[in-house]
Every structure is written in structure tokens, then in C-alpha cells.
Image (cartoon, rainbow, N blue to C red; front, side, top):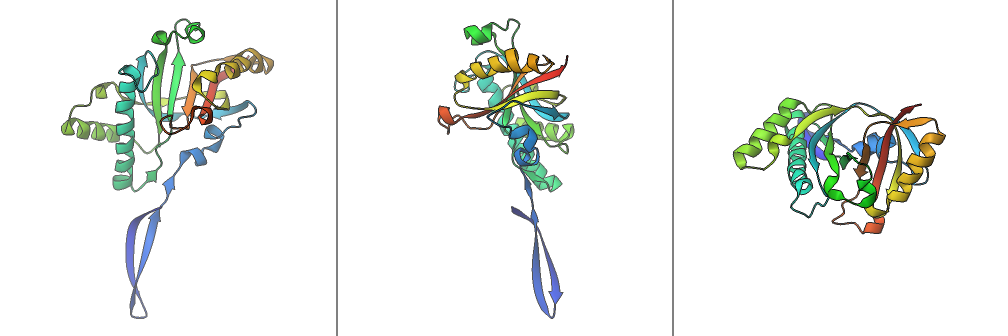
Length: 228
């Protein structure tokens, strides 16, 4: 809770100050069905069209490396936080920056089994409130340009992503242990429920890997589907 406005009025000769607070929206709570699934069972959700800051790339998802993925995050996070501050200051709306998300695919899906990360393709993204418009993104972009060059800034975009029907589950543990869960999802749950895969594998990272032990990492695993 942050104070956004202070009004003063007189009552019986006294000046009383009434402070109006700005509620900080946490989309993980307001969109609980999308961001707080069970870790015990797959669930089907209908994901509405949502706006995202996005950057595309290819190669290992190693944030500590000097690769494309690390450079994308180095652009995505500063812009996301500057938009949050712009929203609070200019629009009077404050919110918690949503978690990092990523779409994953490859020309040959076997590379996910063999571990050939150089062939992995991805889109990293952070959801934006519907009141954040292209002109706000451009304002932040220009402010960053004026303050100093940020490589890759031109590759950032604001885009609406429509996922629709999807199946998801919460995975708790290291990223490398997702395989068995995904195997059950794709080989058992989806066909058994009369569904067909559509779109890219989607992950939502609820934990900060820099501060969280691998066995406690929380990641939403989501696969868009359609009725067969």
C-alpha cells in the first residue's frame, strides 16, 4: 500500500487529513486460476488474450551466460520496471511486476531430449496490464535511449498473445526434472482427455533462481490445446 493522495478538510475547527491509498495489484492473486495451479494434478484453463513485453531468441536458457537469453533479460526487466513506475506516477495505478514467462520450441523437438540447447528457440515475456499502451512503452524506450545505450532495445515489442484453452500444472523442483511431468502431460493426459496440442510449450517462473534452492523452484508448465 502506498499513499497516492492527501486531502485536507475542516471539521469543528480542526484540519483533518485523509490519506487515500493506492492499491498495488498483484496479478498472481487477481488471476489466481492462471498463476496458482495445483502441483498435484493437471488442470484445464481458458487463458484470455493478454498483453506482453516480448523478446525472441535462440540458444541456451542460461541467464548467467553471455548469450542471447541473458541479453534479452537484461532488456526485458528494466523496461518492465520502468513501465510499472510510469504507471504509478502518470496513471495512478500501481502493480507488482508479473513473473517472467517463456515460450519454447525447436525445429526438431528431439533437441529437448538430447539437451542440444543451442537449437532451442524461445520468446521471453512479462505480462503487462491492459492500461499499458504502445505509447507508454515507447516513452520508456526513449528515456532509456537518452540515458545510455541498452543493446537489444529495438528488439523489444509489446504484443497481444492469445493462448485460449490450455493444460497446466505447477512443477516444484529443478528445471531439469520437468521431463517426466511433461511426458505424462503429452503422452497420457492430453490424448486421454480428447485434446490435441497447439502452440508452444509455455513456462511461468514463479521463483527467482538466484535466491531459491533448486528443489524449491516453482514453475508453471502450460501447454495450449484444442478439442480433438
